[in-house]
Image (tube, rainbow, N blue to C red; front, side, top):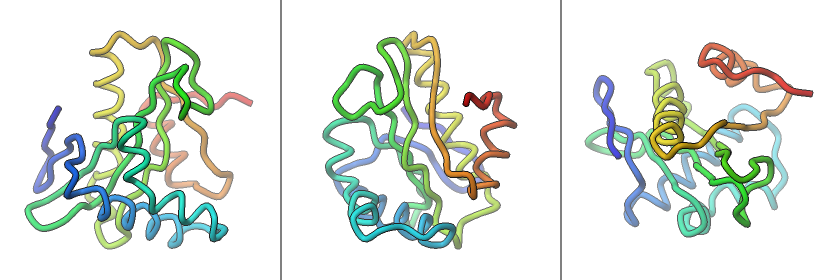
Length: 146
């Protein structure tokens, strides 16, 4: 799967992308939130996510700009998604690459993939202080559940 917008492409991460994807997601979370050392290590460990789920990246000719983890429901990595659903997690965009539509395209790529695979629903969770992410999700049709 590969989709392009502007000067970047969204695609499944290659082995060469994994370290950069982890670094970008960690940098994004550190930019917006206070995260524990343990969670920061989980964010950086994109290699583990890539072996248990689908790791998507947005990249230009020079670097990884953002990443998201696409998790099938009912798998060991799924925290929210049931069978027949997909869960998005650890979405992050390099702070220097924001306002280019990177997060939007990463989420849309996940939604397109879920639709093409016949999944009935895409679910995710977000932190209360992640206002920009919440606006993105609402704009793309996600509905808040308690």
